[in-house]
Structure formats: C-alpha cells, structure tokens
Image (cartoon, rainbow, N blue to C red; front, top):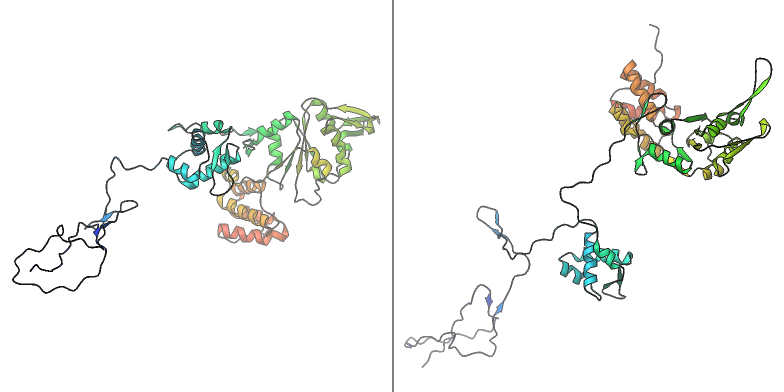
Length: 437
C-alpha cells in the first residue's frame, strides 16, 4: 500500500517563496513500506498550488557590512549610469528649449526630466522661466504641460558653455586721484564704475547731481577729485544773492566797481560750480541758480543794469546736502533740477586702509549701526577718523580717544564713551585741561 506521506517541497532559492496553505495532519508511517517517497515532480498537483513569487530589489544597491566594521560598496560597472554633470547658468533652459523644439506637442516636466536625466523640479523651474519669456506655452488644466512657441529658437541656442580654466578678468583697481590741495582721493564704486568717472559722465551729459549724506563723509573730496576746475560756494542761512552773482565794491578813489561772483565766473569760464550745503541757503536766494541749471543756461543780474550772462560749454552745477543738519531743507524746486541723487556714506574699509586703528573703526561701525537704528544721533565719519589717526601720531592713543569722545554731541557723548571703552578696553573721558604743572 503506497505511503500517504506528503512530499516535502524544496526551496528553489533565497528569493523563492511558497504561499502558505493549511497543512494536513501527518498520516502514520508504514515501517514495512520500502517504496521511495514521491518527488516534487511526481507529486500530484494541488488546486491551491500557485507559482512561487520572486521578489526583486528596487532602488540603489546597498553596501554590505564587513567584519572590520566598514562597508563594502559594490564597484560600478561600465553599465552603471553616471550622475549628470553640473550645468552653467542658463544651460538647463537651453536644453529644455531644445527638447521642446525637437519634440512638437505638449510635454509634462516629468517626461522632459526623464528624457534629459534631470530632476523634475529643476525642469519645472526652467519651463516656467521659458513660459515667462514667451518661449514656451502652458496648457490649461492639470498636470502642467508645455509646448514650444515660434520664439523658442533663440532660447534653444542658450549661452555659450564656459571655457575650462578661464576666469573672468577682474577690473583694474583705479589709482588715487590728486585733489587741488595735493591730498589723494581713493575712488569708490558707483553704478559699476569709479565714482570719479560717473560724475564726469554726468557732466558730459548735462545732468546735475546731488550728493547727500552726513558731514565728513567725503562729498567735497569727491567733487574736487572729479572736477579739477571746481569753483566752490559754501552755503549757509546767511548766503545772499550777491554772494552768488556779485556786488558793487568801493575803490580807493571812492568809486564803485561791480565784482562778479562765483556763479558768473563758472558760467563764463565753463567750469563746475559746487554749492556745498545748498539746502541751507534760503529758497529765494537759491532760485538765482535755476535759470542756469535748466535749458535756458543764462541768468540776469538785476543789480548790474540787467546784465545777461550765458553759460559756456562745460558749465556744470553740483549741490551738497547734509540731511541731519538743522535747517537743511531740500525743496522740490531744487530736487527736480538735480537729476542724480547720490548718497555718500563713510567708507570704513578705506579708513582702515589709510591707517586708522582697527578698534576705532570697529567702534565707528557700531555707532553707525546705532545711528541707523535710532539709538544715537551721532557717529564718527571719515573726517573724524582721519583726525583721530593724526592725533594718535602726535599726542598718543589716550589723547586721541579723549578727543574723539569730546567732539561727540552732548546728548550722545555717554553712548560714544561706552562704545569706545568697550572697543579699547580702557576708560575714556573727553579731552580737557588738568591741574597746574
């Protein structure tokens, strides 16, 4: 009688699995039976038998821990896909534009990313940029789909790839410019060019600039360096019309002669007129400048029999403005005639380059930040820092610190002293006379 023992199924490998099925109770074994148990091939098929399930791995190959505590990483084979290289600015957009141009119709970012082997997020950003520039068109609805427009040929060319090993040449550092007094002015950046060159271009174009900022930041130095033929007028609340156009003066013999003022000289000689602290001058007096600054280019001197003065080529007007000074008012009439409004602040890096103690520069930066935040009303500018450096050479550090504290306005002096003591690590008091020696 054949044995009813159920044949044992063999495992086909590490990844072969037989679905679980109810196991019948084992039948009693016949010890007299000498017949060999049936094999898996000869066993009768069951209705619930299904092909084994083979589980495949997905994703990157994992490293295998080794006995030394490290990891054994499988070596890449020639068929292993390499990560795409990094593209330069605008090159991904040109690749996407080329794909759209070569494949008419609408495409999703995922389709393009799969074709170009790039991330779908970067492809989506490139498609949105192409759509904004008019090189691609988005289809309504979801998911987002894009197609090429007739203007995509220009975008498909893209920027030229950067040449390996070649860097963009840096512009040469401008040389210091000598001022009329012999001091050197170190140019600063303005509109992607040295500030001296920018002011000269404005003069060639007939555009009058306004330089505004705290006192001592270098407004006058900039104008002197840019225009060697400068004629300067120091404005204040007492400036009169005669200070600009001229007035009669008495000769030794008792007669009177009309002496023309700086405005007339600058107009006749085609020179640059710098009105420093122009906003301190009263508006009726400042109105004398307006006919010379606009398209008329001439003024009338009423006090000299209505003499008409015409500006010669090269005549130019530059105005200075200190917003924090009491009484400085920039009227609409003056502001409208000044085409370029340029803010001039202290270059603390330049102060350090010119030999000012780094601790003093650090304290000045601290006070400047507090000034912007409204915590104090004063901060040392380039003029005060250069004076600090000269005093340190002549009288020593202690006297220079004391003088820097003393020139601060009374309401802000305690704050200035606190910042100086923190920067230098020593007590500071305003410069003052001591007891008799």
